[in-house]
Image (tube, rainbow, N blue to C red; front, side, top):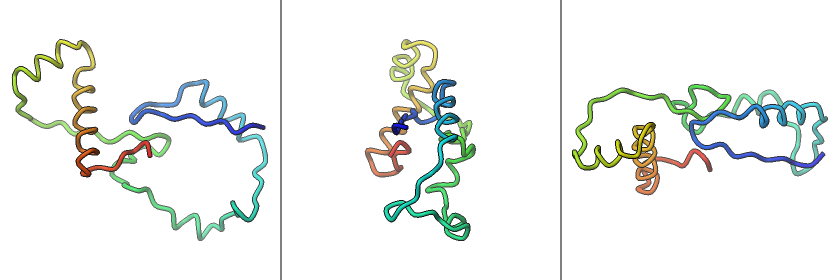
Amino acid sequence: MAIVTSRLKAGSTPSEEVLARIKEAAKYPVTFDADSPELTDEELREFKPVNPELHANPAYFKPKKKQITLKIDADVLAAYRETGKGYQTRMNEALRNSAIAAGLLRDAAS
């Protein structure tokens, strides 16, 4: 079986096709070797999420949302609203990218 990879955008859910590929891959036995030894239950218990606050659903990365009151310059808000439905998501994405670039957040995709 070939190795199949898929990268999800932060906050998105896997498609039915991706889920089907994962379920199919799970049918094949795992081969352990010196480079990838089988981990003990104790070793597995030591694993922790990088940031538990961001992992509300372990099936995929989706940070919790918080509703706040925020004052935005009128022209910035108008520009985003003109982009249509989903403008708040795009604003959040722009803020996230800015925070990552400034070193305030880690990139969830990496």
